[in-house]
Image 1 (cartoon, rainbow, N blue to C red):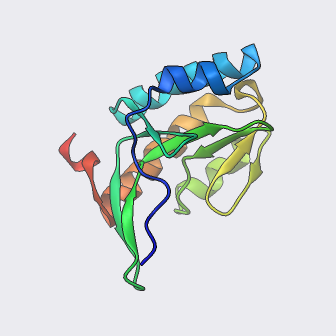
Image 2 (image 1 turned 120 degrees about the horizontal axis):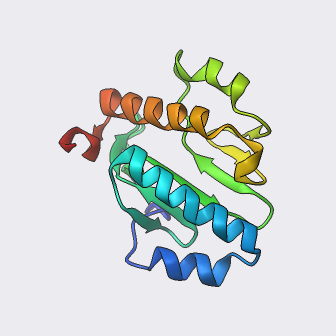
Image 3 (image 1 turned 60 degrees about the vertical axis):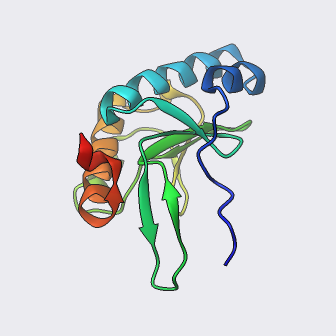
Length: 145
């Protein structure tokens, strides 16, 4: 079975942002997302793979037998836009997207250009709904909180 590329690392989150993120506005947004997601999740930021900043973790296992660990919530300050890993397709989360603001939806993430394009209160609700969903459906560190 293939090894997961996205695993928790010991690389410094601050060093990553300062070396990877070029624009000052995106750096400021990155540090604000770290502050908010730390508060909402109750976990400190950790690097996952080379470019994802994650908070907490959970263990998943597919029916195929593939399994691994992933952050509860997280983001990546990609060159073109932020990838927010904060969404689980629950009945509570779906209507929240209507009030989130300016974003694009991927298969498992939300893409935004900048934090000011979205409603941060709605982002908080999405993050908390995702953590609750993961807590109910996977083995996760969020149960310890």
